[in-house]
Length: 330
Image (cartoon, rainbow, N blue to C red; front, side, top):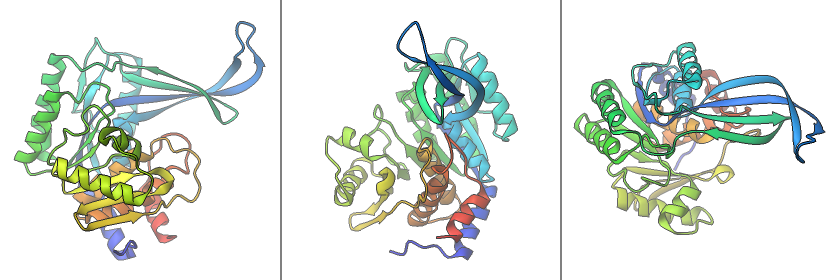
């Protein structure tokens, strides 16, 4: 198969992003970065003392997926649960700044907004601190999320499900989302985690990584032939139209039929930080499919976007110009 997109075709697809609306159902998070210097060891314990000189907040989890979609010019509507706390305020400010819709947000005052704090000294992460709830959301929040989905899915061009196993994707929420998507004939893409791995039956595209796939299927994946085998197993079990297994610096394996597969080598030229690369991949895949791309075209665009993202620090979004430039230099 041809992996290269000509400029006219790639530009047409990317320019089509701005006409699309993507609904993102997933666990919303905030990433906090504390930057500083280490010049001494604590007298209280044999640990470094980080003198913080700068703090930075970035959207994480499904919120980062939404940021990537908005950065590429599309309208994005995240549906998820947040608390009534300080991280919530920061997420709302970031959404407003990046023109991300707040209409799908459900507040639960009894639940913490997930925040991951990374302490970085001399360009090296020292420790990460997570503050979160991982139990399922309450029945009341479930009902409110499902009500948002009923209202918002009909107007979306595609639905992206981003599951981080933080409690949003319950059995009821997932069943309602998939039934609504089937009823309204929506493109559905999924970035799974372990808990519901084999529950996403009938979706358009399923995008696990190698480690998640190994754990869910109980197999070892050592290279492209194993990825192909795993992809075929997943297609048979999930009745999906395509499976894209990502493997970091080993690239991706796209499976779209019994005898139809393609290994796509990584396009990363300089890797600085792999945080958020999977979010960028699923965001671009979904946008491209909504814009009329084939599965292979969507995977190629997503692969180039991931190559741009990993060259940046922390979770980051890719712009239209950056994506076009990456394709131009290919």
